[in-house]
Every structure is written in C-alpha cells, then in structure tokens.
Length: 111
Image (cartoon, rainbow, N blue to C red):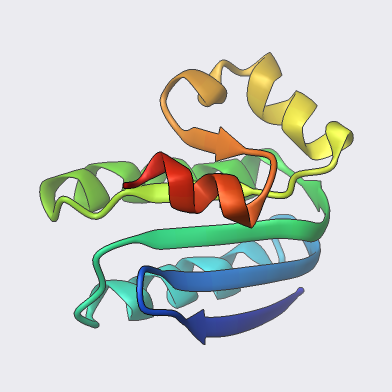
C-alpha cells in the first residue's frame, strides 16, 4: 500500500495505491489519524489506484465516521474502480459515505 498526501485549499487528500487489506489498513488508519490532528475542513480519499479493499480496510473508514462527523469534517471517497465500488455497495456503505466518480465531483459535493 502506497499513500500519498496532498493538501489543497479545500481538502486534505489521501491517495491510495495498491491493496488495502488486514496487513496494510493500519497505514491508512494512521494517515487518517494524522489528518485529524491537522486543521482540515474536508478529507478526500482518492481511490483511483486502489485495487482491492478487504473488510479490514472497510473497517478503517467506518471506524472514523463518528469522529469525522463530530468534528464536522466531511469525508468523500472518489475514483473507485467498479470492483472496489461494488464492495461498498454490497454492504450498503454507499448509503452512509459520500462516494463520487471523480475529484471534480468531490469538490461539487462539498460546496
């Protein structure tokens, strides 16, 4: 798992590359925790190069929803492949998380 971090004016972006499973999801968890100690107003997760996500990986995102909500920091996931998006949809997570096709649409979601 490779994680790139980018700070833009409107969002803190985590770019995920590779597979997010039990052995790599802690890296993403730490990256989100690091983001939350910064003065950010939005958290975007770029999933364009995310090839696979396991239940452990999903758990990382789910575990941070309450904290993000209490801090009024919206999280948007974007750029998912059909395979990764299907996992979110199969479990109904698209109903509780904002998932959009592109970075441009992430910006539109939060205006």
